[in-house]
Figure 1 (cartoon, rainbow, N blue to C red):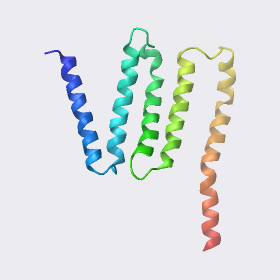
Figure 2 (figure 1 turned 90 degrees about the horizontal axis):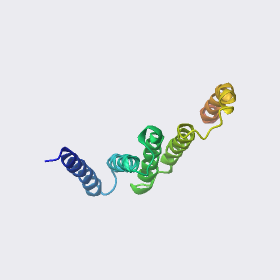
Figure 3 (figure 1 turned 90 degrees about the vertical axis):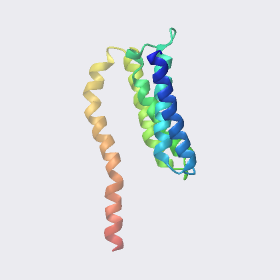
Figure 4 (figure 1 turned 180 degrees about the vertical axis):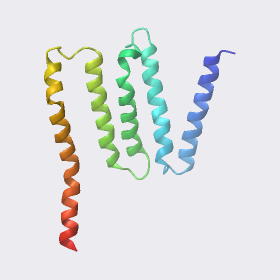
Length: 146
């Protein structure tokens, strides 16, 4: 028996088991559908990369991040109750995958690389400030309301 056929059978069995458990839970188990979606999305990326006309996996590996991002978004929208807070991590992963694809496909001009390395710390600091602002405003509201 071909080992690839056995691997596909085991993969299909795990996927069907995850989906059956998710449906049996009344679509409340977000983790089950997330793992099932990640497995499907990653296998789709690998299957696309293995096609003769597809991008080889050495250049398409950022698409694996996009696959996980899509799984985040779909798990937040499919499972009960719908959670919009899973949209942000999904979008961040997809944006990171897009940036990675620009890098691995060589679409970034070589002259831009020194400028990007110089401004990267400032972008990181600005992102951290934006992420920490809600914590500062929450503490003030707790102090004033007490």
